Image 1 (tube, one colour):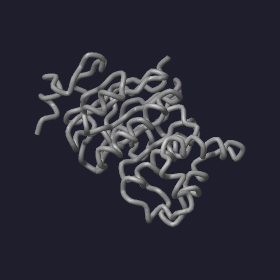
Image 2 (image 1 turned 30 degrees about the vertical axis):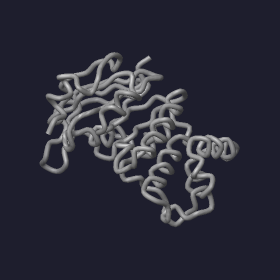
Image 3 (image 1 turned 90 degrees about the vertical axis):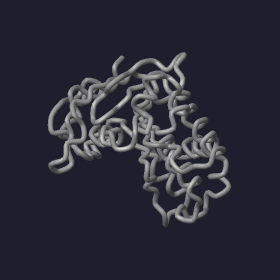
Image 4 (image 1 turned 45 degrees about the vertical axis):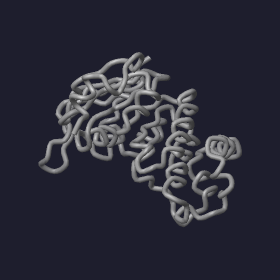
Length: 232
């Protein structure tokens, strides 16, 4: 079943056109990666879905309902979660308070905390620590954990490995892999080996357009299609 479908999406920032007719779809249960160089429109695609930057034209359907024109909180209420690149945690709240705030059902809080702490044991060790005092890697873990506990049917994940040490990237990859067992994921990821390892399919974005797509099985980061559009 198609969970998310974009058709001919054009999105602008002021007079600057960023997306030039993006079309893609995500099937329920999939992990789909958006890959491409910096500044080609990957994050804007996620922002368009969330209606943070509403498209000028084109359609965005979620479970056969249009998201265009909805408020962002209405998109979230339909089960679309977001793990942004810049984390956006509550710095003055504790780790546990950040997680509790992301769990909509009060009866599910303890189960949600178990999910988060199972994925990232270091967060359990620091559950009473103010989130703003965590290291950068730990803050990214917390941001991802907040997305995992939010009871989302679709999770939009933006650059989860950005700025993280290799071991932390491995932990993040494992957590997202676990999340994919329960949640459909649209993943923006600059580190191509991670994107290919996690995802079932990929779309290559260049200059605001989808220029190629395919399944990740038997595809490597050295594929000519990736070198053509992702090399500096």
